[in-house]
Image (cartoon, rainbow, N blue to C red; front, side):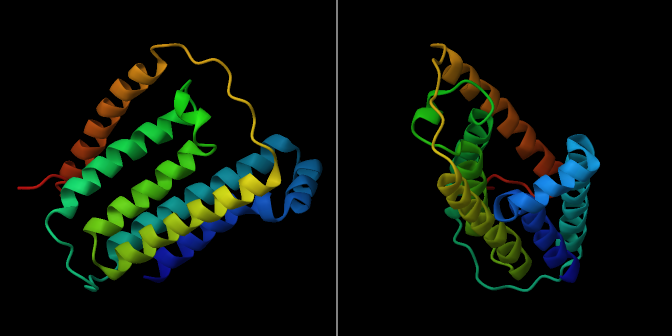
Length: 186
C-alpha cells in the first residue's frame, strides 16, 4: 500500500507544483530551460503512474463496503460521460461554454464512478485521492486567472466527439476485460 500512497503523493505534488509554487517552477525553467523543466515534471508524473499501478496491484484486498449491484450501471454511464469530458478539454466542443475544466471534471467523474464499484481500501485511497486532486486543481485554476472565452464551435464537433468517446469507452472496457476486470454486469 505504501507504493500506492507514494505514487499518489508524487502525482499530486507534480501536478499542483505549478499552481502552488509558480515562482519555484519559473525559477527551475529559467535555470534549466522550459523543455528540460517540463521533462522533469513529465518524468515525475510517469514515475508516479508506475508507482500507482504497481502499488494498486500489490495492495492487499481490504474490504470496506460491498457495492450494490446497480452501481455497475451508474459507473458505466459516468465513465462514458467522463471520457467525453476528457476529450472535450482538447477538442472543439460546446461543453467548454458550460464547464471551465472539462478534463478535471472528467477525472472527478472517473473517480466517483470507480468509488461506486470498488469497495476496497486501495480503491478508495486511489480514487478518493484522485477525486480530491481534481477538485483542488479546479479550485486553484479558477482562482488563478479569469476564464478564457470560448471560440466558435463547428456544428458537428460535439457529435464527432461523442462518437469518438464511444470508441474510446469501448477500448477502455476491452482493456478492463483483458486485465480481468469485466466492467459490465453479468
